[in-house]
Length: 272
Image 1 (cartoon, rainbow, N blue to C red):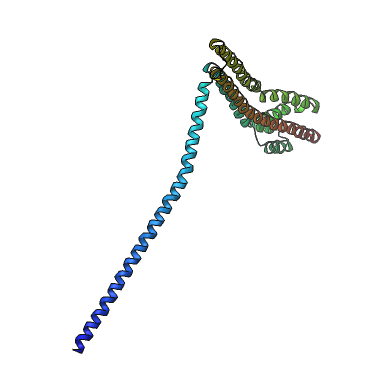
Image 2 (cartoon, rainbow, N blue to C red; image 1 turned 180 degrees about the vertical axis):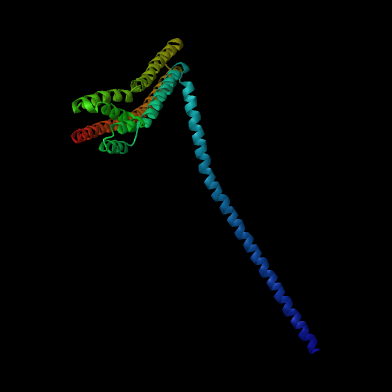
């Protein structure tokens, strides 16, 4: 009987322990599911929070593009097309000048060092070959000076100065067209403004009323053409100032290289 009660007690203890373990596992599983649910909700909320600004930015970008396109169309094609042509032609001249000036830039220190090394050896033809194989106005000016190296320093100086003026004019080529379109763009915009005002007064005369609804159409054309004309002028002005800065840099290099070349030729003549 004692053994029976002992076995029964052991069976009860084991059953109670297993039930407690199962309950504990169930609680852990419930807690894990709750944590996972909270984490998922948090991740979803964060994703929504991240996606919301992105969607807003995309919507704003698309909205800005569509708004500009719509306003451009509303500004009367006869005048807005002229402003657009001024922008396209002005940018074409700007890009052409930027490419030309970028190709004209060289390492002047390296060029003058090569010329100095050739003249130090008495190799005038070698110095000329260096200039011929180098692009840009600086090399061209140095080549013109080396061609007259045996005619005296004064002749060389006049040749360098004269050819430097020619190269400076070549650098500034087509810049007058850019300034023309910078001036034309806002002028075309103001012309559209005046004509838009005339249209507004014509509408008032036809309607016999000065209500805002009658005037709105002509005023819209007037303001839109002015806005786009000023924007085109500002864009072209930025490119034009960049071009002027590159021309100024090249002109400075030409002047410095000319002075250095005269010094090198003077030293060459003294050694000779």
